[in-house]
Length: 350
Image 1 (cartoon, rainbow, N blue to C red):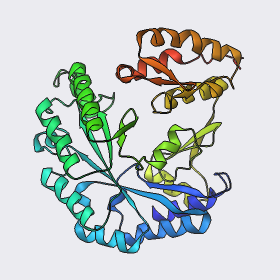
Image 2: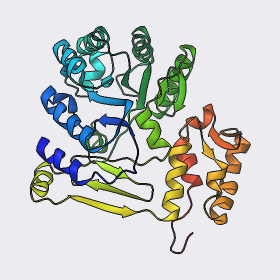
Image 3: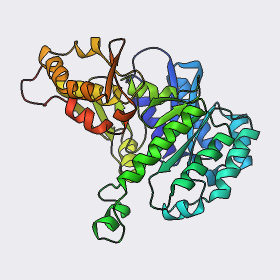
């Protein structure tokens, strides 16, 4: 797998526009299982093929049970990784057991203590709310512990049921009650209040950061910057098309052994480009910029004006310096608003 990744990097050197690379993100699976020497080989290849900017944000996603103090010490000493994204999910064993996580609350706390002790100050953790086992009191406790560790960035997600997953099957068969939408909304509002009180900026629907700690990688995605994804199932975007690698590990490796890039590609129509911009921008603190909306066809802009008016009237969308942004109440129905603002992707649309 490592050799295949190195080879794909070589083949795709020209995908990104010329200039410095500001972020490198190891994620999408469980990259924390990589040995330091394996991670180092990938980083060395990236440095050889791309112009990595001085001070680039280099993030490693990790499971708490993978982050031993020895591993963290080696990461700090032998790699340029300067940011950790840790999948805590909860500080309660009852939640973690229900979510079928490999770690427990002791692992969750211990890995944070080890990371801080080894000098990793730029941390983000994932927390999940809305789970059947997560009472309001436990959600308050999860947030309190995160604040206690002075974590500068939080990614907090409502538990969702996706078709084809074990949870989706249990819900469909009646073995698990559907998720409580009122509970999720209530806990999201609790999160917004607590994060604001602690000095966090709610810069994207699911992301909260202390000043100066916005995720550079994620922010670039929301702002529509090109990105290159390497490895099985990785996605890439160049502004007008997206492509995704085959998800099967064996087929991915075999293809690259034969010098074949195993991906599919989709060229986005103008309507798809517009809808993608609306979807991502409306989730952020910056909102959808009027000038960018007007860059598409007058028909798109007219549709947007007509569709957004009801949300301006109800106070769920506001206009600040020519940008359309979700208000606090709008954030509770962000997907519905974005969907209503989408234009139809019809033949001949421009």
